[in-house]
Image (cartoon, rainbow, N blue to C red):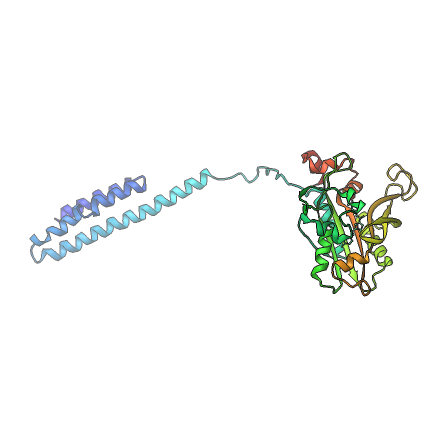
Length: 344
Ligand code: 2U9
């Protein structure tokens, strides 16, 4: 039996040495150490041995089994390590190769302009307010002193869902809704950026969808001089510190008095040139003191409170700032146009 065990051990260890992979090792394990294997068989047959021989053979069988087991385990670790090393060698990367250029996007120029205008007004203590693009006739017109038969409605024809529901023609309803929420107690100091819609034929300067930023400041003792100071600070922040503004009388149903606001021409510095059509000035926004009726309709006592409001077209600002000649560029998604704004 001693010889048999010695023989089994040598055979098993030789097969472990020869095994080229984990599967072959597994086969050796089953063949020698399995329940039906020769070592188990030896142990089972020990009953036939004499009392002196039994413990000796039992000890030897256990030793042989442990030796085979540990040889298999050692070989297993060696095979696994070799496999990982082979994989690493195959997958090594050449870190000296040049990198692949990353394709980067760009903010849409209208987004860039909105964010820049927001920054300028946030610095002046304004907050940003937003509201729905589908509006009621009341907030889009009535609350802004544009009753049903008002002639100024003709300039803001819209897309109607029903007689009372339409795509907003300006962001002014956001201001009216915000004022209502303040329940007659100022100050209210907000700017309202967003998409607006008008029934219009598209050409180089008109688009049936465009963006506006409107603003409003309601408090006690708000005057025209406050409006002028805020708009001058904005113009200098957005167009450059050397710019000035001028106000010309105008009319809007929601403001009284109303003004058009011009910025001095950046091309000629006010001398007169092609860009400003020889006037030295460029029209950029409309503004005025909020009509007392509008204040009252949104819940403010017009004897206690006053305020100013202003509105500007985002496309027009972008066209002036980046010398863009056609409003349709903003909405046709030509990558050659959009890629020019990567640094903006
Ligand atoms: C409330 C009260 C008053 C907003 C104003 C303008 C003047 C204006 C135009 C500029 C170019 C629109 O994009 S544009 O066509 N806007 O001239 N907007 S005052 O006045 C308000 C708004 C809300 C409650």
